Amino acid sequence: MSVDQLQLWNCFSYYPSVHEFDYLAGVHGKFRGKDKKFYEGQYLFTIDWAHPETNILDTEHSEIPQEHKCAHILALANGNYAAQPNNRCLWHINSYTTDNSWPDYKVQNTVWEVEGPDWVTEDSDKMFYDLEDKNGQ
Image (tube, rainbow, N blue to C red; front, side):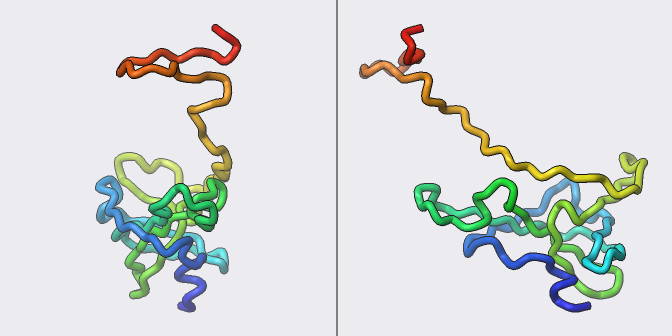
């Protein structure tokens, strides 16, 4: 198989991390190739990317929610190894998989924030400080 079939995207940063998700360890799955054919294999591990310094503005694709992708590494039945993102993979777990149709994935494009402009902390040396709404509430 050609390299661009086995790995759909280039790496998303110079800072990879490798994980083996226990739930997927040894699980059989398949991915949908660029040629719209399915290729079957077994999950080995996942490579994810995240910049180690969040204060650097240009952290590339790994920090943009709708662009972030990890690479699941599969040992394919045809002898190749593939690195495929979430939206190209389907896993088959006998006790859970009841539908083998291709799902219509939605892209996560929300940047989640818990801190907002409407509140401030008190200006004191107290450990358990209070939060106040800027409107005085």
